[in-house]
Amino acid sequence: MGGRVTPKGVHPAPRIRPHPSNHEEPDLIRTVRLALGAEHPLELLVLASSLLAAVDERRANPIERAQRASNDQLSRAELIHTFLGLECVETSALLSAMVAMSDDELERARIRKVLASRGDALPEWLAALDSAEAYWAIEMTHILGDGDDIIVGVRLADAHELSVLVYIDHNLGSLAKDAFVVGEPLEDLVLAMKSAAEDPDTSWNDLNLAEARKRITDAIELGAMTFPPFESDTWPACQPLIEWACGLMPTGGVGYVRPEWDDDALDALKRQFLSSPFGATLQDPDFSQLLDSVLWFATGYGPGDPLRWSPVAVEILLDDWIPRKIVAPATFLTKAPELLRAFVAFSQEQRDIRPELRRETLAAIDAYEPDYQRTIRTPRPQGPAALLAAMGVLDPKRPWEDNDPELGYWEIMLEALARAVGTEKNLSRLDVLPLPEEPFDWTGIAEDVRPRVEEVLELSDRCCDQLLDAEYRRACRRLLELIAKGDPEVFRRKARADTAAAAVCWIVGKDNDLFGPSGGGLLVKDLMAHFGIHQGGVSQRAATFLKAAGFEYDGYGEIRLGSPDLLVSARRRRIVELRDRYNKIAKENT
Image 1 (tube, rainbow, N blue to C red):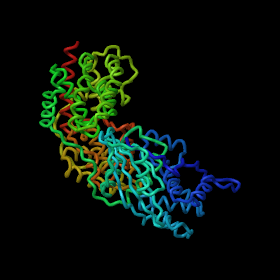
Image 2 (cartoon, rainbow, N blue to C red):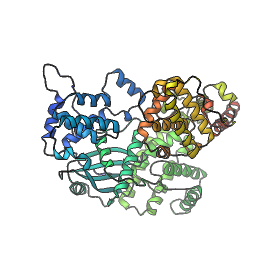
Image 3 (cartoon, rainbow, N blue to C red):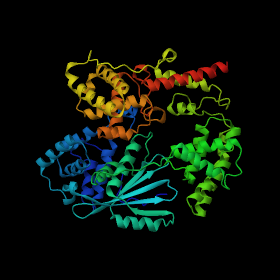
Image 4 (tube, helix red, strand yellow):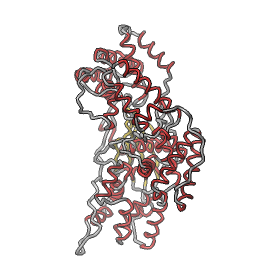
């Protein structure tokens, strides 16, 4: 789903050689000259975008960023500095495109000052990029809901047009999975896509420009938090260009809204299915329990709609989710395909899906069942063990001699809980008292960074007071103390205080499972919205702060600081409950 048209004028970024010898002209200069002489501005815009994307650290984990530095790979600042120091019309053209794609006001001012001093004659469309107009947005959707294509038309100052297309994958949480830009009017691109993929189940709808911007930017931010990142021939090379186009659209969109299914609504749906002709024969209690798991998957993952089933959703459920997530014997799990056939047929009748599409989804169950049945009978990590294996805590290739879900399960969980609080001794002595209200401890913090730390402290305190509570405020203060004492250099660099405060709150929130159902369910985007910033820059700042405070972070999203002093009482209470549960299981099995 999502109909693709081969992008035009999109090429990989050329190798940069900023220091030519013997008066040899750099490859890049020749490439820029050709792009300037091209019939359409897209050549130069994509070139500038791909160069910026190549030095964009948002998609790299901290380990990769360290490797970049050790390999002397160009940073964004070094790239811009190179072009500022090489005076010619070609670098002026690149800088003019890059300044439009920058959201750093200091960087923009620096580039514009240099360009003004050069006085190079540039094409009208390039000199007036800031006056470009996003004039129309269209959303291409499919009835099975795996993903949407959002297409935006952009008109440049000299009447040249571009069309931006972003594919948003709902099975992966509505993230930007692919994108490209073509040098055609939006109307022409849509006509070409319709003729290339005639599909009665695809809808084409006008989309409010503010809503298009919100959906695309949210999807890009979510993609930046996903590791490993998705890549294609054109993505993320065109990401800076896509973000520039988003900046041309108004703000105020709502974004995708997940359906709300509370327990009462799910119970009603479950009763409706089991009393229908589709579920009437599934009276074994195992089917009822499996249905709970299927509904958990359908509402908690992907777009969150329990009545939406496609071949891709079936693949995810049978090929990965159930074998990995549900800790149960094979005799129980073996019944899932039978249940799924009945529930998918019921759901698709409720949604009035065409018979041909129904057959395709049911055929996917048949196709994936053999591998599914083999997998659930194969020794493998399950439940939390599978998560720990995915995080690298456990070796996924270790011998799993027995598929008994109780074998060693309590030991694995107790190990994970001990890591969350630092040591087994900490785990055994863990209390559930609220973190005390204490003043910020300035002892050992360098005098010259105090004003900057005070600014971050004020912002993080305000966030905790408005979104969280006094315990989170104390935990954030303690983390900020560790950062400022551990490496004051991080506060001597030029950086935004709101990004720093957001990073502190995000780290503490991740460590306390704030963004998960058991920890309160606050959305990361709501935390970022409080500070008015994007997630990408925060995750980079967080990695720097964690290193300064003496913690390790591998960039995979899971943060376990191993310090009870940074855990709020609700998180510690949950850990104590789990500790006691698994200790009881351990005693029963020894």
